[in-house]
Length: 313
Image (tube, rainbow, N blue to C red; front, side, top):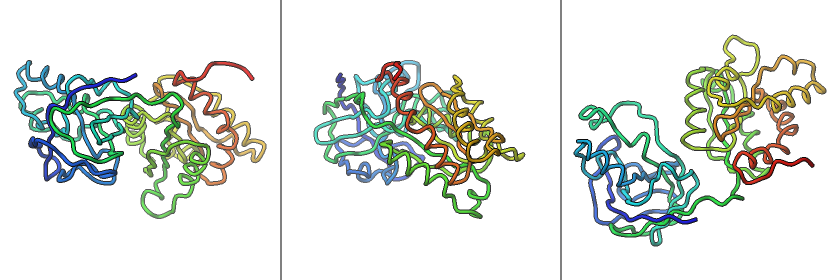
């Protein structure tokens, strides 16, 4: 399936947090972004895109904004970016982009919000990385190619540790989980180290599931009985469906190694199309837990994505 639109504007700015100004053409640099734009760099939000039709609707309601006012790099008519999945490939001449995030959290309201009471970028804008560089011009055709059904599953690893976050202890459990997932064929899109703070954990789980649309989030740590351990509570708070069998299998399998596994409180849930699995915080426990469940996770995730059938062995 292919979709296409027309580039209506290209915008850049020399400083972050400012409105961008329109230019006739731009040089896109592989693994970096647009030459001369302040948001370019080695990260997953190198280029921002917005549907031109959404801006027209906004202006029809009295928004009266110019190109680049929302901080967007590229405005395209005919493509509804918000309804394209992360992983979509956007081709425009030699330029090839890959969508990495939909929407963003707005930490402080912009000038447009203060002026008209709304800003569409946090909910309608998308972000991409540059897979292949080249020049893009106004009037060029942009083609969107949806991800293939057999594309590698995308995962994020989140470690929860007060001491690790404070630099008092080196985190080894997160890297171990990431290494095992990579070996199993997953693409690791993010690794995070956070303190045991429930609301912050919830926000990051929501961001990874909703905006980055990862297939799997593995958390390590924060599943014990300490007062500060709150990973299961954060996980359950963002869940849309329960998948208890995974956490039960981890505890059951770990019981054969140590009876203290019964004290683990890890949960396993879905947030829409993302599976979240809590693991204990030690390297040994992470390795043992993933050895128990990892061989079966891909089948469940493929069913969730609609690219595999429900069937027994």
